[in-house]
Image (cartoon, rainbow, N blue to C red; front, top):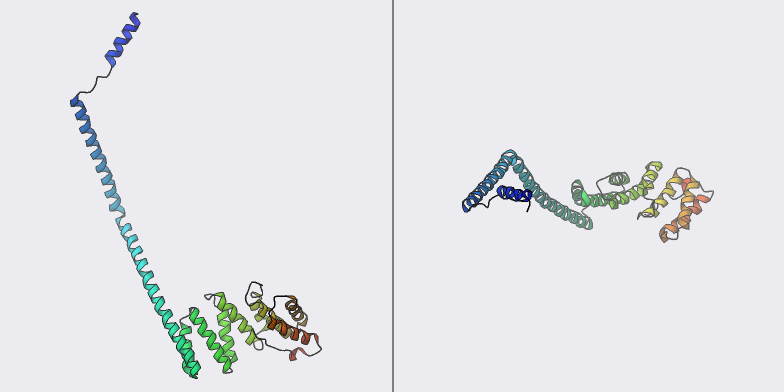
Length: 256
């Protein structure tokens, strides 16, 4: 063996880390445990600092959540009670109408209407019908107009109210205003499209535009899906508008 290799082995042997004694191992274990405990304390301290800083925010959030849930439950219970009261009052008003107690019925319907919502809209529609029966067309038309413009209601109510507004207001309202209101109902997907087109033809004739009235009626006659009742009236109106008879003698109202 060369002197160089022998010297390298000797140096390596001298530099080799000696195995730790049992005492040293125990000391290292104690140190590790101590460091772990310190780390844990530091984490706890950080959490405590976080809690001290943000505990008010946390409490406020929890309070808001609790109040929100409680508030919703209270609102739901209150809303349920309100709807139940509306339903009972509406039913009583219907019974009063059947019994001929018109004044009491109208007062009950007005009470329901003031609460708004679906029952309120139904009450308004029923009130308008009573007004028509009593010959108070102006008041009925005002009710229908108000309902048609109420953006808080479902389209099922506003669309019907628009048709009834045009139907009963054809002789007392501005034709152009009614035509504008009906235009949004003429889409084939709308439940009242045929009635809307029929009424628009009448309104066009009221304005003196017989050409547009006839075109609308012929469109209804050409549509195979036009209801028979609407088709029958369209044939009659078209014949009238094509005749030399004056526009003022033409029918001014049609059934929805």
